[in-house]
Image: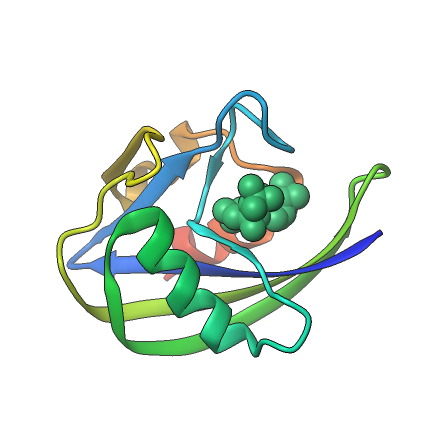
Length: 127
Ligand SMILES: Nc1nc2c([nH]c(=O)n2[C@@H]2O[C@H](COP(=O)(O)OP(=O)(O)OP(=O)(O)O)[C@@H](O)[C@H]2O)c(=O)[nH]1
Ligand SMILES: [Mg+2]
């Protein structure tokens, strides 16, 4: 099963907004960049805007493509399109009841992310 996903690296000053995946979700208990699956005919940019509205309550007004990461979890193959989200309306929150917070980019190594995210986290720590 190959799943296309759009995820947002929501940035403000030197911090990034991350969320904790719920225990019943795939890769549950790990931190993520908010986002979700692209619907069949949907572009990743549209999926990003829709998912960040649903999951974080923000309206994306400026974003730029960052990187695509393909990863095989064994039970699931994902193609993650990561976007940097640099402007948005509203204040992000965990609108689906998930724990979420702004964290300094320099502290990202203290958070456990899914395997597919490791390269992205390393990129951010170097930036
Ligand atoms: N949103 C998001 N998903 C990620 C990240 N890294 C990663 O491996 N994934 C994987 O991407 C897949 C899709 O993400 P998702 O569960 O957020 O999809 P969704 O919001 O549409 O959820 P739903 O299935 O509850 O409707 C999951 O298998 C998840 O484990 C990440 O940083 N953000
Ligand atoms: Mg999601």
